[in-house]
Image (cartoon, rainbow, N blue to C red; front, side, top):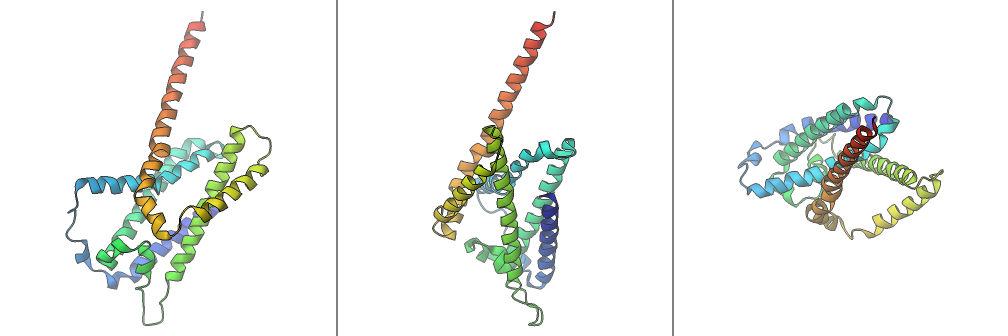
Length: 231
């Protein structure tokens, strides 16, 4: 997982920087103006959506802490990864904005359409296919990590000696969900902008806080019991 993850990350960063450089002649900085004209609640909602959807996915790596060679470095690695992802996302958003302008608000995949503007001497064009290939690769890797984490977690939760039965069960459920969840890309985007932030808040914020609270209470009770039992 780590080797392929590092390779995909390096390829993605290189592609983002290359696309940005190739699109510099299409930049229109006036598209950034006027700035911060929307109500403050819109920015809060946007920040919440970004936190819940892309960055909440890193929570799945908590499953892999017991398998790390140096578990104490997990926090530092997570912070570095989130910072790199945030910087790359900022570059992509700014690039797509100065290239597409207001047109970006009606597109479901702005980066794909921005890549279509690349045309170097009628030789280097149609490079959006590279973006599509990288996107499919990243999505496949993401689903694979989630797949493994889900199977591993359920196996340990039920104390099963073998995990193969869950591989097939979860695999079938994924296929059924992927085929029946959304009727179109527009429906998926609408769900991400409306229902997903509310649905994901429970798993990203509420459930981890409840788990932490229960852990602190149990630790406090165990400490009091040890002090009581001490002669």
